[in-house]
Image 1 (cartoon, one colour):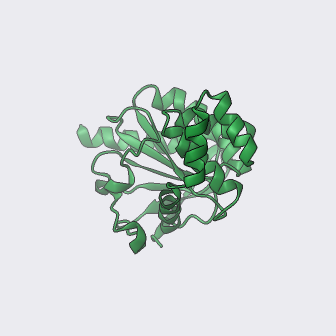
Image 2: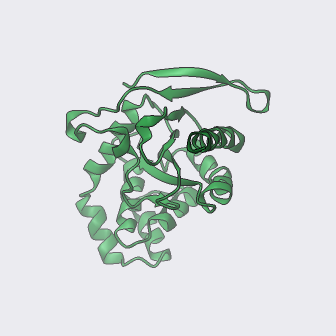
Image 3: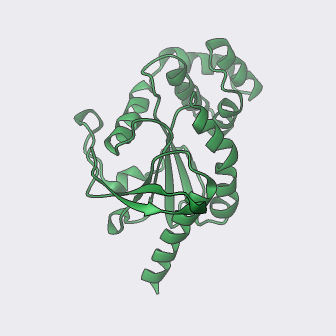
Length: 223
């Protein structure tokens, strides 16, 4: 597990522990050795500009109520203030809390939709509906205009299961035991500053403070 150093934080008169990620990231052998630079690589589940100076990574589960709340209430605000303005890029990574059942099926469905260039449409629908039964997932695919046969084949073959487990192992190596969990870091040369771990679905103001601080620190270094 990655070591965390905690500092006290006071958004809206509440004290929250925000962790600083220390050292380089090493995953289990099945995932191979990974560095902080590997962590921020675009794997097709990314929002925002590739040239955004900082990146926010979420480890999440489509069956998680707190994840749904964050996706509905906080992500749109982050999108409007930071993603659309080119200040931040956002990566979604799977952290199914169970190794089978709806959590895995939801993660797999989103990736099957990605094969048809509809990842974010499925992401948003799954969090809006949180109905993840086999027939319901097929209905989601139909509603989104996906090729039904291709989607069903992808779900049946489940070839992306290993990639889902790799995301989960990555999140676990950061010390996450539940969802959602977030890592905020530099997009380029992330090893040159300490990434920040935000362990939970905190309000927008918490993310705003941490994002603004990291952007400010980067501006000072450029100056």
